[in-house]
Amino acid sequence: MNKIHHSAYELLQSIPDGATILIGGFGTAGQPAELIDHLIETGAEDLTIVCNNAGNGDYGLAKLLKAGRVKKMVCSFPRQSDSWVFDELYRAGKIELELVPQGNLACRIQAAGMGLGAVFTPTGYGTLLAEGKETRHIDGKDYVLELPIKADFALIKAHKGDRWGNLIYNKSARNFGPIMAMAAAITIAQVAEVVELGELDPEHIVTPGIFVQHVVHC
Image (cartoon, rainbow, N blue to C red):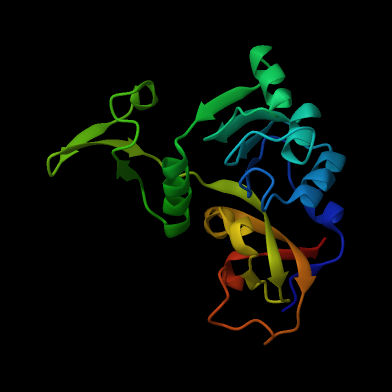
């Protein structure tokens, strides 16, 4: 079994128009920018992107937005000082936004990876984010029902990977990568280094290869 692939572009050509894609990263930390660049080259469009934020400057995810390939963003932090690409698209009505509190975003992605039907969370109760959603009073507290976020593909970045797809991460670049790998039908991991089987300490592996279909050295 060898999940190492030498052409990210060839892999990403399998992503169809209209796909839902989980993209790892907390800002630029852990963002699989090289995979995103190749995704732009494929020409896939009308994409729904799930990510912590909506791009920084003209880099990575922001470049994908600028190319006009994204119809909807699902994220927790769409605006910051360098989010001018998203801001311009949103103000012009050229992109949809589903705003999800950061903890709920992680929880919903994790729920999909664990095969849960839904989760109840207190975050968002009594706000506009809870409108139209089921609520419940449990053990003295009010909760909102949130549905899992699953995807056709996950694009993530790891520090090291082996040919079985086992991954370890570099400090905070880990962020959403592990749970996104679990919540997608196909996970493509960009790694800084490919190592031989056995070089990764089993106790240090964060994402087991069962959740990863392809590994690319970028």
